[in-house]
Amino acid sequence: MKYFLIYLSSFFLYILLDMLWIQVIAKNFIHKMVGPLMAENADLKAGILFYLIFAAGITVFAVVPALESGSWTKAMTLGALLGLVSYGTYELVNRALLKNWPYTLVWVDIAYGIIACALVSTLVYWLADKFFWQ
Image 1: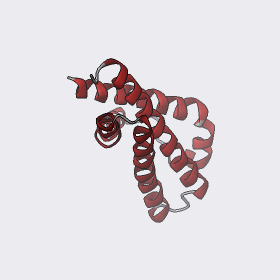
Image 2: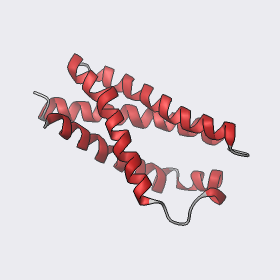
Image 3: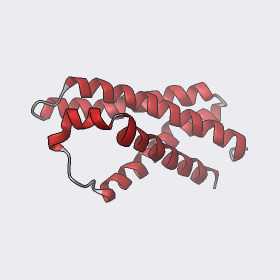
């Protein structure tokens, strides 16, 4: 049950942070960078599937190893590394294959991925350690 609660925490916290980023903080920036490529309406099924998979990654590769070692800094570091690998892979493949994919977007999105994953991993670590890891 504790693993499921960690997973749910990762899922909901990442969605909240990502929606804040996409819909508020970086909305104009994203539109400026890739506006013509954007769909009129988001594919909610694909979006939810992404968050389900990504929450599993945060849980398995960052939060649980950190809880097992008792180190919130490990959660932060592993989360940052997960963000680098996943966002870096996505952005650099886009840059390599898509015509005129902007380098500015590549670097901003990779930085966001590192920070977002580190933050969510750390917050979930603290929640789990306080409420349901014991």
